Amino acid sequence: MIGTRRRRLFVGFAAVTAGLLTGTFPLDHGSSNAAEASPKKPKAAMPSNAVSYAPIPYSAIPGWREDDHLLAWKAFLSSCDAVLSAPPRAPASQAAPPVSALLNVCRRALSAGAAKKVRTRHDARHFFETHFAPNRVVSPTGTGLLTGYYEPLIKGARKQDAEFATPIYRRPSDLVNIVAESERGATTAAFTHMRDLGSGTKKPYLTRAEIEQGGLEGKGLELVYFKDPVDVFFLQVQGSGRVQLPDGTEIRVAYDGKNGYPYTSIGRVLIDRGELTAETMSLQALKQWLRADAIRGRELMWHNKSYVFFRELTGSDAKGPIGANNIPLQTGRSLAVDTAFHVLGTPIFVEAPKLTHATKSGGFHRLMIAHDVGSAIKGPQRGDIYFGSGDKAGRLAGITKEPGTFIVLIPRDQPLSGRKADRRP
Image (cartoon, rainbow, N blue to C red):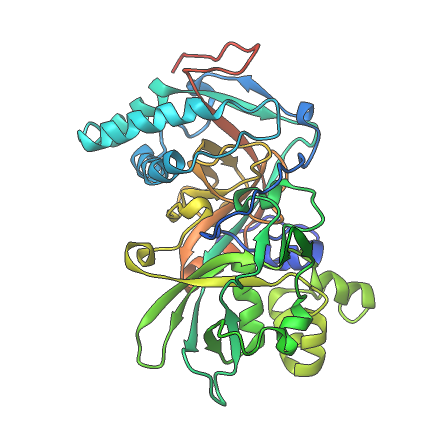
């Protein structure tokens, strides 16, 4: 996840801090590659009839013609193989377009890409305008919320020693999905994952406290070790990261499931206790509080029962971070969304005039692609922008928390039921 910022109650709050306070931070992005054990269909995050689409012409979209559509095209194309190989479930919202329409456009995009028919920004804009019709999201909640996330770089080691003592774990073999990974943020289920005891019997998995007190020791699940338990906590919040090993080489680790418990805001816990105030709370203040006393810091982190498991990326997957359904994330173009309302792979034009620190021109008007999910990304206009890898991306993501609106590009093949999609450019 810097520019001038509008004043608000929590001036300078990082998006991560906002989530730690309110529980709205985009926890554990990405998707497991493990088999999903007959996940149940999740319930909608809000009533399906609460959202509708209003067709608009492309000429009415601020910043549409000025955007770099070639970057958006490359992001769209990068997800088409994944979308076609594992077609997303239809969103619970009845207002959403059919999945089949998006699959058809993906096939055309791959064909156009193979024939090198899209080489310029103009070519890319023409492709989107030919195959999609813009529709503004209309919901009772009005304006949505945009935050940011990124891929951190942390020093680690493959072997445990006095310096590198805190592990992250691989996914346990007895962990099963209750809902599909791509729909974690869209469900109201009590548990997204559980422990399989065999013979159809399932129970809640170990909590963060139980795992960190040795609940998984002796199973050979340790993947990498780190110096600081606080770094491990925030790596789990991001859901993926790069690890620099002692010999200078780097590996990538990615989300591979969680223990199934909902996310709890530890910053909110501190404020409710009266140990920090909303005015003094910041990401830096929270980290300082956690590190000042290791015992009390561990106790606070245990309030968040949610615990994330990882896998090491290899081969072509290791070239970059992975989003939901193994979709390669694209810096500044990948968006985490609520799949109760949006199909993965859908192009979404994001309008956020007050998000001024992420662009040179001021304001954020950009065509993005729904590539990812997050446990706390809920709502038809709730989005999380992937800012890339490293410290600079972290600074950008850390100060992103702005209102925004979505214009969803609906495939022209199958316009929304009962609505005539506008075809004018």
